[in-house]
Length: 188
Image (cartoon, rainbow, N blue to C red; front, side, top):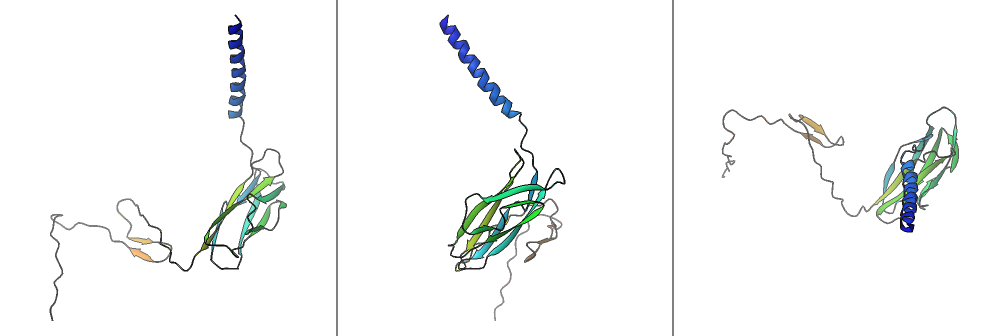
């Protein structure tokens, strides 16, 4: 008898734990009362540079026209990233400065976290990346893969420079298995 009571007590405790966990599944996500643009900041500088890179975050209200108070902080407190204001009221603009002084070639990352004053509101995160480039070596360009539907376009422009001209493939009449001809060499 006591064994049954112990099992029932354990099962009721387990049911209570499961019901609490299931309840969290149906909780609504935090409301967004603050919006931030851009959603990511990426910049680069050559190694040895002492010129700060500037960026700006536009902070806006969502879901109403009323001003929303906010605070901002750096997630990892990177010493190369400076934020012009750590508090304000949306709509607002926060200026960022990315200082490459004395940084070795690498990719440096931090995140700006905007915390609205509304209880339970979503906190936008803006990743910030500073790439310090070693200018003594020539970087290998990334491989480019093109995929397009049939027929392929007759002109493709990559990053506005250089221009790559493609001609659509049109098989000549007859067999596809024509022998290749070698160019004739001229002797002098």
